[in-house]
Image (cartoon, rainbow, N blue to C red):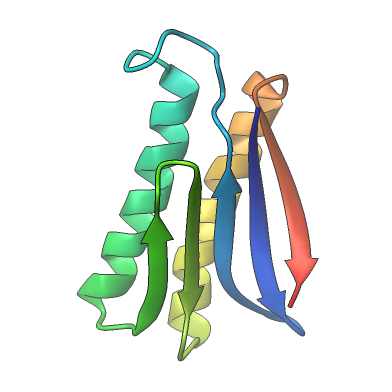
Length: 103
């Protein structure tokens, strides 16, 4: 099961944390893991392309991103990630769950 948590500071969306593996398919061919990874790395790369300073780590068990200087535009990017994750939970809810946490 992949657990995706969107991270808020009060009402400002600042990042996400992803833990686990979907185990939907064999390693390297798991479409749910691939979808979550693509959403996450697209988000990281989009924030980077707009020069947002972020704390990012990925040790293949936990992936975490926090935007140091959030703005309306960074929240738009992070909300797009969140929408993608919620869409995945509708079709693959047995393999990915979404949560929200206030920092």
